[in-house]
Amino acid sequence: MTYSTGGLLEARSLTKTYSSGSGSREVLKDLCLTLEKNLLTVVMGPSGCGKSTLINLLAGYEEPSGGRIYLDHKQVTGPGPDRLVVFQETALFPWLTTFENVAYGPKIRGEMKGPRLEKAIMDLLRVVGLNDFRDKYPSQLSGGMQRRAELVRALVNRPKVMLLDEPFRGLDALTRSLMRDYYLELFEKHRGTNLFVTSELDEALLLADRLVIITNRPARVKKTLTVSLPRPRTIDISSWPEYLALKSEALELLHEEAVKNFKAGAVNAADFVGAYASLG
Image (cartoon, rainbow, N blue to C red):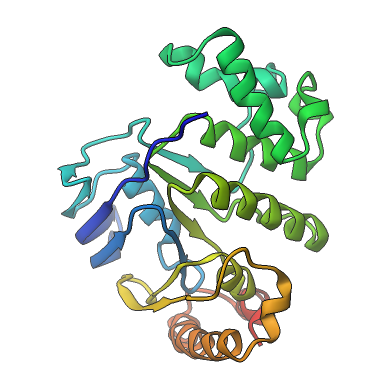
């Protein structure tokens, strides 16, 4: 199967403000972010800082209050098949089988049919170990299997940009580790431009070509770290001096913003401890 080359996605001075009867709430302010072609960019920031809002804006599901978004130098004005989102919660159609869920997008757009579509889907399902579950419904799959099917469903649509909003959230530690391995294998085989949001620093460093730290609300980019660790990556690199140096720098940046968030009352103590317990 031939995959589209990843796209260059740019957010220029992105601002998002929500208004209600009690006033307005500025979530993003003059945020500038560039997702380079065929790289995996990971975004981290304090709880409630606007990471999901950023995903929704880049996907075209919401309109910015200020600033603009460009894909390959053309302004983004709404959703499109060139940008696909993998959400925190499963979005599989419960009345369709695994194969039918994955095939839905290409069939609707008429891009692939018959044996060509069958081969493309089965090749991907084999990579993530779901080839024997092609005729199962979502209710017959474990949480990890559903997440794998979500990844394949997004990838088979050949988007220029994949946006992943904490896609492994809520999975147990072992399943999350396996999902990360499956995702890395898919990325390293097919590339494309990926934006991945996570609250786990070790996960971020295992995945990222670039790690973007954003500030407490209203969110801006605080710093972008280049992760030059060689691919393919395994957990063994977590003991390398280069990895530990990156982790220390990222942890300091995240801690600064988490403290601001905590002092502002945006999260309670339990949320603060839960979100950053794994960072030490």
